[in-house]
Image (cartoon, rainbow, N blue to C red; front, side):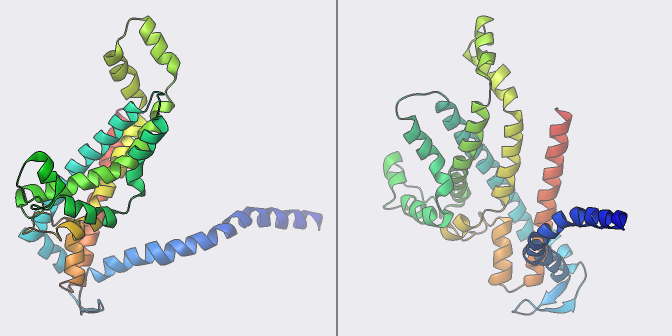
Length: 291
């Protein structure tokens, strides 16, 4: 009898932790897994204006996308956009983290300013940025002495939106890099100085190698975030002029809520998921080979 009670108690202790996970698991099912599989299912159908599946077409939505010049343009625009955002966002975040890595008067103020972009809503700052880039009254043209239509010229529209996005991402990048820099043992720099290493040698042989895990994580997060950027693009250019800023996420929105082609938009969402997944796997494999 005592043995049976002991076994029952052990089973109860073993099962109990999983019971606490049930509420979180249900939330994931309702808000993550069910919409994901529903999107895959809807991508195989033609839908009505309410998004209800009507006609099963198999992989026709996918073949239509992969043979569409508009979708290929969206991929090209997305790649350019992600590249600019990655370079500017990480570059500015890393530079500001380096500047604030030493104690000096006013460091708290500057640290707050550099981290502030992460707390600003993209939609709100996009409205401000739209006024700043106005061809006639914008402060950017006045400061540069130019007369460029930043948001209406296909040559500059994508770059302008990417600069804003990169700046928005720089705040969280600043925190990542600041945390990484503060974790580097100061004795490494002291030993290097004793051995005659100058600041440049210390930077490339101590700072950069020590930041490799943070750099890798930041690259992955920034690429995924750039692929998912939407609010500032919708407000500033709405995918235009032409289709110069019609990145994949905006094209999904346009197909679903402007053209009411929910099946096509779902197929595009699945393709975007696959693109991000493949890039993430590739980056993790590269990181493992370098460690």
